[in-house]
Image (cartoon, rainbow, N blue to C red):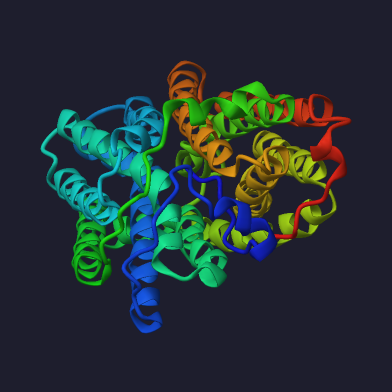
Length: 420
């Protein structure tokens, strides 16, 4: 998952650029060396999140290849989400004063191992072990990558560096699933993981060559992570985000089976629609920026409203290519809005503690991804794919209600955030 926005401007990114640990500047890399290093971190986040979501586009193929049901195969999304939820705050505290270059290189190496294990998995147990390793990577990257970006460049360029890193995350959430589905349809699901491993190896070499020493000046303290739970607006945002993301993934984990089985589309049409989903997500990223600039509360309400409508449409639109395309377009735009809406709300709710807000937002996202995928799997195995869509729509509608009511009358309802 992802609670970021690749198009945020300096005013929105500036608070988020201050990590929970007070970071010491890197050893004065030249401007020429700094930006390739930032790019190496950005591509690393792209590969990491793409790997996290890739099984969604390959779910039926992997389930068939490893001889498990589609519902059981959904654990490939659930398990890394559970571990990432614990790893995001846990690794931040556990890393202490460890050089952040060492941390990033170790996480990328672990990602390489995870991809190779998944590609070579002889059974589903091995696949789950690979996905657990990925969970550590997801939590770690989310915790350290933005702070590393700020260490690599001078203060006046920090917002741009963070934006570049977050762009890698957001692009992966939009294109990871369709790219994996495309590779899987062309050469098989194992090839998709091998391709991800190859790109990870390139990133690992680049980070080892380009990242300078990145020592923090002090460690993150556990109590720093509790601030979002003590404020009304940040609590309201976390409730809305958990319901929204849980509802989305209860349904989205089974998007490919939905298009194949309910809409009756061919594998070629499904791949094309998943790519369309990615393009629609980019439009959603830009759209939510305009809304959040006027009101963070309206941004979250509009996002949850559109997402709930899209999920409901998936059960009412009928079948065939046109109906499937309409659902995918609306769904893609809606989920493209999610990162900017969630981040805009939290930055507005906790302007004095953005790093704590983002840490809890990551944890909320991962808990919701795991819970949603688990719930969706149970519903699919028990009642079918259409029921999972209805459950997802109900949860997202609950998120809209939480944003509209619990967030009313506070700063999040009154104070605009700079447009993503």
